[in-house]
Image (cartoon, rainbow, N blue to C red; front, side, top):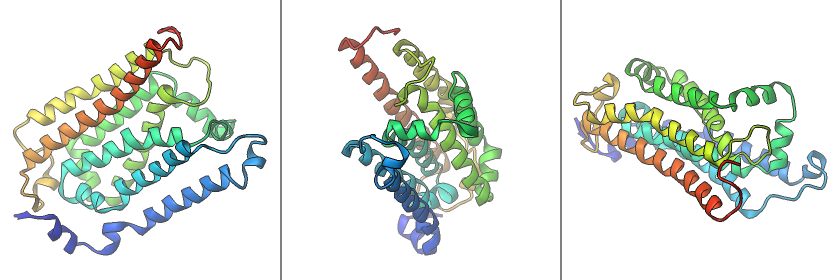
Length: 271
């Protein structure tokens, strides 16, 4: 049965459409950020400057991205009707949200968060190459396997858990590329190009396979009403295109920035 977006919205309750618990979490994180960089800044990092407008805007953007991906009707489309909506959600959480979070927190706040303890030890291990490449790409590919995705679509708690774990591994993936904190063994620009190449290359078999496969992978999506009249195969192909385009844009932006720095004479390519 082909249906439009209005039909989907009419057949869902307010909580399923707008997820107030996700909004509450985003607002809470925003308040904690404001407290850390505002009233409590002198206590946490004496003498540290307040974040600039661009940094604050990046953090607000990360909260908006998080809520749009998980707290709006996009989430309903993703976990009930459309693989393409699911892939858009994944790309927002993996390719847009992490760079905004990393850019949004001031370096002194990152240094404070990673000063010691279990989190610092975990972070050090999970951001040491090539671990983040395998952790993110491995988890992402496993999540798209028909059996795993179908199981997560049937079990809401599993779907939510996998999304949050994916966000964590995406942070680890992006950290070696755009970390604002000086760290031993930081990737040179040349190594970053290799890192980006492998990050993209690992995903290409999945993109190609999903795009060119002529049968539906996911029984749960295939059995649902066809939103926008998309067939299951067309839905999968759109999802594959979204995955490729989002990764190409995100990784390409970093590659372009590093090349621009090199051509501008900031440092040697392999320094």
